[in-house]
Length: 302
Image (cartoon, rainbow, N blue to C red):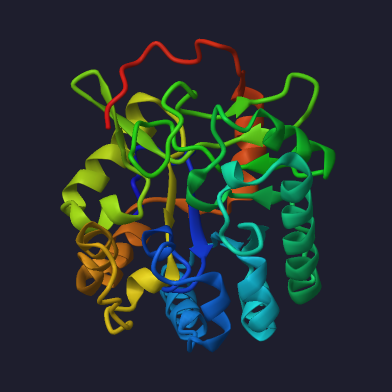
């Protein structure tokens, strides 16, 4: 049952569409040159996700790799035909800080063109692989704005060993004063005066469901803002291949909680109100603050 105490708040539901072998956890053991020879599982997993969303009567945004869209155009069309938003996740999951501006420009241009051709939708949203827009890439938002993107959801405003921009605001902000583009960060909650990640991914799989319920309710009730949640299609696939030569830490991050993920997602999509990220961005634009050098006075936690 949806959270009736906040009927006006619709949270942002998103899926980062990449396959099991394209994740950051395995980037040092599975080379991009090997990808074409690996059997993909993303299409079957997306069908499971679409069924789950249809059961709950919710719509979401699918931030899709151009690499995946190019190889699975029928899957992309099914996502669009079901009423979901298609958005860009870049071409092949390279992190933004590995580019310079010209190569980033080409990456997002190529991915967008492929996704639009496959879906028949105009792509207006972008999510950086591994939330890799941060203080090192001030030009990324400028390039997105110049290419006509309406919003980004590319910032994790926390400290983390894999990603993070802890100085960024927790909620919608305008990274460029002269542009209309809005950044909608992934959800965080406050615990003991410190920020904690609360927007999905491995945190959702590893921690009890009660934590996510508490965190989203805090964002909706105390902050009176929508929470942005994300997950990956490979997270509903406990039978995916194992990578024996991956570091133990990477294997723990990737495989822990896969068996419980589908059930937890079912609980989540039924308990709260959810919508597409383009809708959330449109509603949040009026509340977006302008980015400055001291964006938040709240504490930061890993």
